[in-house]
Structures are given as structure tokens and as C-alpha cells.
Length: 602
Image 1 (cartoon, rainbow, N blue to C red):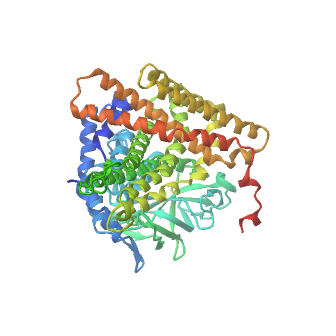
Image 2 (spheres, rainbow, N blue to C red):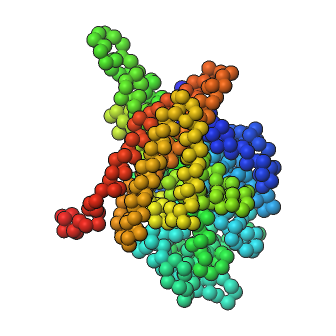
Image 3 (cartoon, helix red, strand yellow):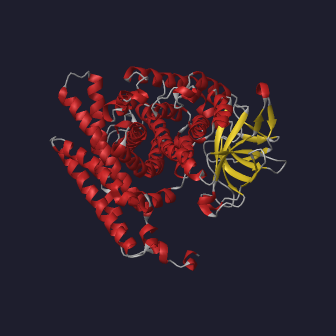
């Protein structure tokens, strides 16, 4: 039996039926794409690459991980073939504008292809995702010289792009970075400093590495207002594809718990000799430029968590249908044949939790991708609406799948019992791989503070009002359906619970107690995620109920839609009720995280 890792039927349902991604081709920017049939062909092309070049090497790249040896990073030889296949299929140029030689696809289509790659082999896809992000950054903010020099080989998959932000002493506190840039007479800069945790910072599949690097120009203001963005190539390009070493040292690769096939490097600039860098855009605006790449990356992290959980779920589902063990409760005959473990209620509970997580998380990802693209094609108030909704949803879509995905994959491992804890089965690898997602691109704590402290206060709280209107519209549609009406009412109560908790917290902030306001931001993030996923389940419930009521479905299609409703029922019974406990904790008068003395931790 062929092993599955992502349902293409589910992906098409979410893209077209639930979120109408194919309607983006009605806008002039994407009219050349051609609609649903062409999008299907593109996604099937990605699936073919994933089946052939990525998924068969998922375990092997973990068993033979990245290694820093003899001054270089050694990677699995399959990585070169993956880069070639992805480049030949045009995925490195997918979001680049037509006039620059790209395909100018909707980001939602490109990201859906990346989702397929992530589910097949999340280590391998990491290289591709960070490179296209760096490419888009140069396209958006680089001058014509930078574009002409660096974009073509990156679009061909010959040069790897990276984002170089983190430093040993600063971590996530970018205001404390020390990497410095000294202006040179020719308009370039000499850059010195260190960067750590640089994904894809060196490997054997590319001939050059283009580091989009945050640094301070000498004399720049302190804090984030003094950060600039630079292109720092490992090798400086010359005539006829010649390359000269630019004194960018890769001194280590971090050996990780998971994603062991994905290089995570330590870079040093300017220690062996002058490292030349080139300013991107204007001085001191680097962080605002980098947010383009960082915001897209945050959606990708949540998407990757959902993709990994999808692969783990399908793996566990196959095992549960094939593994005979035990007999039904009440079965007294010891000679009766054991039944597949999917017949046991607790195994079904674990599978349904995974199923409803994967489907809900992927729907929330598609929701964000839709607004990402709409912000590019709409104008005026509608454009502002798209931007505000995307800003509000981004920390949620990064965080909720990353945290809840870990629980989902833990349940997948549990389905295997003792086998799940062994290296012979891949369940443990999915568990190790997904653990990084709540750390990547801003930890859960950082994203939670961003949501509560910044995103919900933008434009006087307009983003929350817009989201409330979107959820209310779905509640109204579901309320008109007898089967869905109870779930619409439950969602409305959850929204009220969320609003009550927010008002309570905002009263603390209004009274000047900002520290208390943000102390339990992670709980508010969890609450927000549960409400957002309830909204997505109402969307899916409305679409699937409409399809079933319309009739004229094949047996397979009808079963698919009934499967969505089964997940909906599970979510509203087992998951959404957690909102009450979270609200109670948020409004509790005690604040032990603030008022516990340090000595109490002894």
C-alpha cells in the first residue's frame, strides 16, 4: 500500500471550495495564470517532484544528517537533485514578476506547492523556501544592479539565498545586534560580526550563498531604528561566472534534535579579511524591509507544522487500519481474531484529534494566504482591510499550528504504541521535526506578545472588528442550517468569551499595568487560536453541508464531505470547550509569573 503524506483532495477543497483561491485569477495581476485547471496542473507538478525526489529520502536525510567537516558543510547528495528538479519546474521563479523573468503566481498557489514539499520532506523544503524569500526581498527593495547580479542565478537554483538576523548575544532581541557595516569609497560596505542559526547558510547543492544580513552602519541610531539590510555574498561574482571568496566563514553547523537534513549554520564576517556588503534600499530601514520576508516566513512555519502533522496523521492512519490488536470491549471469546486498532474508541479519538487539527490548521493557512494575495490586488479600504486581517492572523497562524501540531504528532506516535518510540518507524522523526516550529521566526511567547500588545491595538482595534465581522458572517450562514446551528451558537459563545477576556486585559493596560496585561499573552494566543479554528470549521461545515444538500455527488465525494462534518463534531466537543478554562485563567486575580520571588524557584 502506497504511503500517503498529504491529501490532494483536501488541498483542492480548501483552496477552491472553502477559500476561492482560483478566483484570484480574475484580477489583472494574476489573469495570465488561467484558472483552476492550470493551478491543478502546477500543484500536480509539485506533487510529482515530491513523490519522486523528496519523500523517498525523508528518512535517509535524517539518518545521514548535515555535518560540518573540513571547514565545509556536507549534505545529503540527493539535495542537489532536489534543487535541480525544483529549478527545472520553475518553482524558484514562481512569485517573481513577469517582467523580471518570473511566473508571477499568486503566493497562495506557490505556498500550496511548498506545502506539498513540506509534507513530503520538511528538511529539504526549508532550503527552497528561504531562498525564494530572499529572492523576493531583493526584487522588492534592491536596486537594479543588485537585481541584475543576484536574481538570475538565484532564480536558476544555482545560488542559495538566506536571512541572517540572529546573533549569539542578542537572540530574538534584534535591537541588540552588533554586526557593523563600514562605508567604502566605492559605495559598498565592509561588514564584520557573527550570525547564528542561519538556515541553509552553506551546503553542497549550490555554488554561492547570498546572505540578506541585518547590520548597523557606523554611527547609526541605537535600537531597531539603526538597523540596515545588506546583501552579503559568500563569493563575489566576476566576469564569465567567476567567483572570488568574500571572507564569509561558515564555522559550524548546529546539530539539531530534528530537521537533521537542514543545515543551520554559524557565520563569521570579516575575520579572515574584508567582507564586502551591498546596501539594500535606504539606510536604517532594514528591519522594515526584512519584515516582508519574516511575515511570509511566519505563515510558512505554521504551514510547515500543519504539513508535518499531515504526514504523521496519514502514517498513523495507515498503521491503525493494518495493525490487528485486541478485541472489541465486551468481546469474551479469546479465540476471536484481533481487530484492527482503528476499531478501538481511544485510537479513533487520537486519529480524530489529528484529523481535525490538520484540516483546521490547513484551512487557517489558506485563509491567510488568500488575504496575502488580496492585499496585492485590492485598492483603498479593501486593501487596508486585507492588510489588517493578515497582520492580525499572522501571529496566530504561526503559533497555533506549531503548538497544537506537536500534540497532534504526539498522538500519531502514540497510535504506534511502543513502535512509535523506536527509530525503525518514522513517527518519532515527525515528532522531532515539528518541535522547532514553535521556536522558528519568533517563539510562542514573542508571537503572543505581538498579537496582544501590537496587532490588536492597530488602528484603534479595527483589525479585531474586521475579524469579528468575518466570523459573524459565517455564524449567520451556519445558523440557517439545522445541523450546523448548534455549532454556530457555540462559536458565537466562544467569540463572546474571547471578547470578555480581551476587555478584561485591556482594562489592566488602561490602568497602566502593562506588565500584567502581557503576562499571560500565551494563554490569550491559545484562546485566539481556538476561536479562529472554530471559524474555519464553520466555513468548512457550511461548504460541505451545501454540497451534501445539493446532492448529485459520487459515493466518494459524499464520504469526503461527511468526513469534514465528523471532524467538525469532534472539534466542537473536545477542543473548543477549552476556551472556558483559558478565559478563567486570564481573568484570575493572581499573577504568579510576575510575583513569584526568584528564590521560590530553588
